[in-house]
Image 1: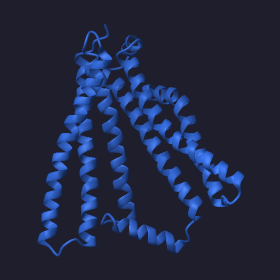
Image 2: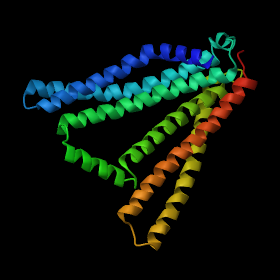
Image 3: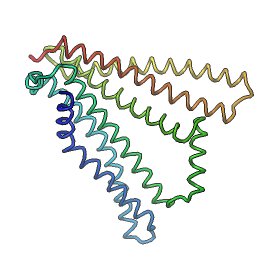
Length: 268
C-alpha cells in the first residue's frame, strides 16, 4: 500500500514542483549562456541582468513554494478538510505518514539539488568548462578540504542535505501534528509549537557544537597548531556532527507525528 500512496503523492505534487524546478534550471542555463557570450553589448547586458533577477527570485520562490505547499498539503490531507478521506483509506497510519514524509523529503532534496546544479551551470558559464588537469586539481582540493576523497566529501555533503531536508520537514509536520490536538486555534498553536521546537533544537545544537569546538581547539593547541590535516578533520567532523544532529532531531519529530497520528488523531 505504501507504494500506491507514494505513487499518488509524487504524481500530485509533481504537477507543481516539476515545472517549478524546470523553470529555475532553464533560467540558470539562459543566464549562463549570456555570461559565456559576454555582456559588452547593452542589450545583452540588460538581458543578463534581467535573467539574474529572475534567477534570484526563482530560487527564492522554489524553496518558499515547496516548503509552504508541502506544509499546507500535509495539514489538509492529514488533519484538515481531506483528513477524513485520507484516514479511511485501506492503509495503516504509518504507511500514510511515511508516504507524506518520503515525498516531502524527495521534493525538498530535489530543490536543493537544482539549486546546486544551477550554481554549477553559472560557474561554467563564467569560467567555461575546465580541462582535465583543472578538474583533477579541483577533485584533489575538494577531498583534502574534508580529509577524504572527493567522492567521500560529496557523500558527506549529500548526507547533510538529506538530514537537513528530513529535519526541516519533520519539524514542520510535528508542529502541525501538535497544533491539531487543540480544539480551536490550531494554526496559531502549530506555529507556537514550531517556534518552541526550533528554539529547543537550536539551543541543544549550539551547546553541542560549542563543546565540540572547544574540544577540537584544545586538541589543536596541544598538537603542532592549526595544520591542513587538522582543519580537514575539523571540517569533516562538523559535517558529520551536523548530519547526525539534524537526523536525530528529525527522528524525534517523526516519533511525535507517528504517536499523534496513531493515537491522538483529532479530526473534529
